[in-house]
Image (cartoon, rainbow, N blue to C red; front, side, top):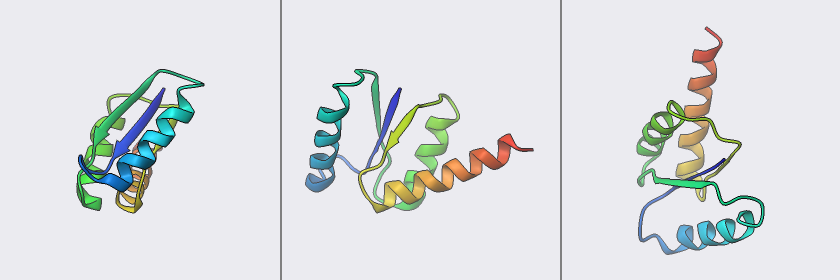
Length: 84
């Protein structure tokens, strides 16, 4: 299972990165899910927590800095919760 946390619909540079990633990963799996995180680290973090609280993924792709930082914060929060 692959999850893509997209930046924002209509962002040309991140959409190009996502397209290239999807083309490469489809050779391995067709099980790809995608959600839009928004334009800020905070909105990407909230979307990441929402998505990761419902499902587990084998691989996560984040196309830019805000999606990456938001996802890392969410993964740290979820890890801390699971250790309690």
